[in-house]
Length: 274
Image 1 (cartoon, rainbow, N blue to C red):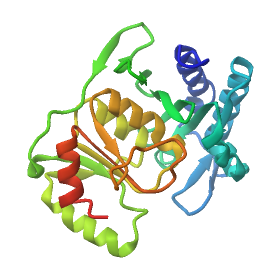
Image 2 (cartoon, rainbow, N blue to C red):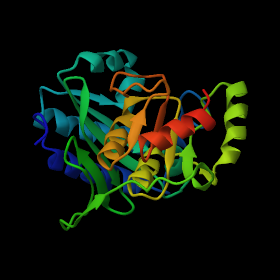
Image 3 (cartoon, rainbow, N blue to C red):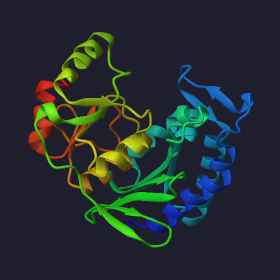
């Protein structure tokens, strides 16, 4: 039990929403089921909206005292976002993370939720509808891969390596153009750079020990609260670019995640010179 939210119940709710509203629409979306929001690659689909509607309705029955903050709810009512900073208890949901992939028929998307209590993230869940499993964490309890049959595997970040052997993911699309060119040039110092266009799977990959860094510049709580806590519980060092902790109300300042503080400092100094 985390605060007054039973995380296993919330995890099951994400799964049920995916099975009812997301998977039946995968590779079956009509033209009227997909719309652009801020730009051509910022999409919302019928699956996003219906899944969030289901999760919100069930959450409000189970936890009526919690603020529900969903990506699509905020798109419809932007003022909701400001309420997170002062909420005693909040459930933050991304109904389909990786909507561009989902709408393109690429099986790399996820359903994410986090629980915020007293201004800090205390639980995070990332459900993979295609693999039918969760990566999840409660503050102080470690990070775990869990399956519906009850199997659980503890997750740990990768061992630190030299800069030129680092493999990781960076979202550079929201950087200022001149800084983007500088950072992309700096990334020649690492072994590999990739990007799934899906924070859910990027955080899962990192927490599973398969890559050495994640970098994001645009911070929306539904994209990063769950994954950051999961990464930290798997052993990572995560902080904004100025070294300060990333908190639920932060919308800027960037985010860098690495296996340990020394790796974080090396990446910040040599690569992510923002």
